[in-house]
Length: 370
Image (cartoon, rainbow, N blue to C red; front, side, top):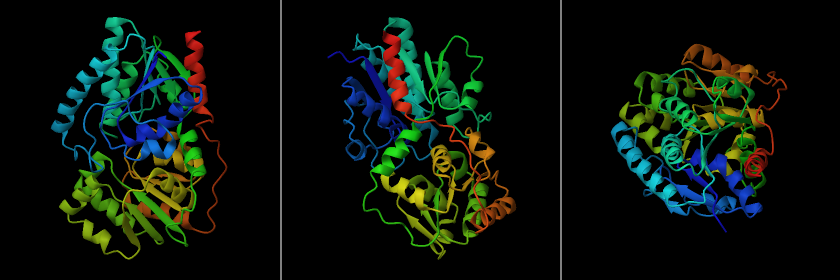
């Protein structure tokens, strides 16, 4: 069978939001080429969700959670290498009709640029950006993701948009083929929760789930001091899923021992996605700086403190259970107490991400070829 679709992924988040599309293709027996840039390790990921292993791995997968440890020069050299390798692989395949990539990572930006060049030179296929149109309107928040997502949008032929707000953000892209399909996180989280068997809660009592890993945060000592102070104020048991690069910076800034010695905070290894979704569905509070957890907070109606100056996922801020910290320590501590007050009630809100999104995406691509 001809392989007409290539999927290029690199980070864990990209895989976790794209595997439902891959499963939908497998369900319909539509062959696809799975190219992994090697940005993060996918060890165990494919097996957990029934997705085939990558057909091509462009660079060796890292053994730890971070490939670059926030070193820009390493990232730039890696991007250049991946760009060349993607171009070579795509130009080998005359039957390709679509090249898909997801989100706002370095892998997505590099894939968009590499496939754009190949598209314009060979006129063979269309590049497709999943989760297009997100904007924080601040180039440095988050960095480099805000740059990467804009780049991916500019160099793609087809933009698949996750929310109505995102659709409005790219209303001036008049030469693009734009479709509002929803966010695949709805499919991912639903599938992961169904796979949760014999999982144990991190605590039998109320607990908070914490992750901090954004580059603009962990490289800033003042921000990390504020974040640690806020975490120390949480009155319930908290579990901090600590990434390698975050730990390195906490140690460098002399903050790690404060967290380690705090009896209410337990440092744990990052959880696999299935266990993570189960714990998120059971927790009483989320503290994060990543984008996906903001989305999952909306899906599972969990109070969420967003440790950022700005966010591209503003939909949650329109509810009464997501709060953008902006590193205002006093206001953030007050909001945590408000969310954990037994009298606090989450107001009903519409899930902005839709459902059966992966099916819509595959239907759309098939329809375009008829």
